[in-house]
Image (cartoon, rainbow, N blue to C red; front, side):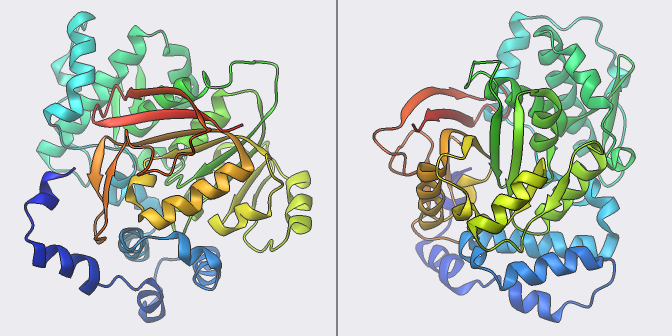
Amino acid sequence: MITWYRRKSFLSKLKDAYLKSFNLSKFWSNLKINKIDNELKEIVDKYLASESLKFSSKYWNKLSIHALRQINDLGVEKFHTTISSHYFAFKTIDDAFIKGLFDFLKENKIENLNINDLIFKHEGFNITQSINYNLITYLLYQYLKKNNYSDDLKTLESNNFMFESAPILKVDNLRLVQDKLHSLIECNEIKKIIEDQNVKLNYLEIGAGSGRTTETIIKLDNRINKYVIADLPPALYVNYMRVKSTFKNLNVKICINANSNEKLSKLIDENDILFIFPHQIKYFNNNFFDITLAIDCLHEMEKKIIKRYMDLFNLKSKYLYYKVWDETYVPHCFNNYLNANSREDYFIRSNWKQIFCKRSICPNNYIEQAYKIK
């Protein structure tokens, strides 16, 4: 994730950072609403009038414009096959990406590979993308199977949010979706951070995207007390739909109108899963969250925004887990180099105790880190 930037000229870098504009407010005011429903429209309107605009990078504005345009043209039902590639549904492979799985499966041989499982074209993918997607999904499945997570796979398969429109790979009488396999691997790392199985945990997840991790954690960690998602539209809305559809037995609420600790506390008492804008994190009591998750999002932020989040985590959370590129340049930003092993780049406090730092099994060019904040 760095060669593309280093190939650019100095003038091109300046233009990219300072002359390109992704004005979400202007885009939204000019958009002729087609397939965006009233609930999503209200969320976007409130977001654009909120303090949370300060939590969005230029790159995120670009992604939001693209996602809203796709949803408006095709409907949210087509989400998985139109913009799902932003949320851990990979369709390309290189050595840096696949090395972890390659090394593992070289030592733990794949048995009874049926090549016909991989020869399937998905809607919205070309043939090459489909085969790459299928291969990655199949290798992730083999990794999980070798690590005895078959029961968890069956549990996740039962969740059916927009499942029929997702790119599904059928293997061993299971219907596999790649993003759920990534999330299951993450979930098992996250559950190791707080080992006590008898506690009740309050989770905060920022930048949750389509809700793949949200769904997996809620389904598989029975210690959850409250789960809070802080994100921007349209991802906030898509995740809300996913959770509301999957967990009909839980109280799920969009809480973007809460503007004080008192109002938010009432909503916390009344609900199990809450959806908020990022600036509303400040309304929670200090140390309310036992653990905060930031997966595949911090490395897309300008440094001032990363610092803003880390300042909040330092006040509100006891543990932090995040997953980022090993190194990257943030698009459309000038002072934009981020190295996962640099505490300074990610504003990690000197008194935070590192629990682990490791390469992800896949993508192998991602780094997972966990810290005890307090």
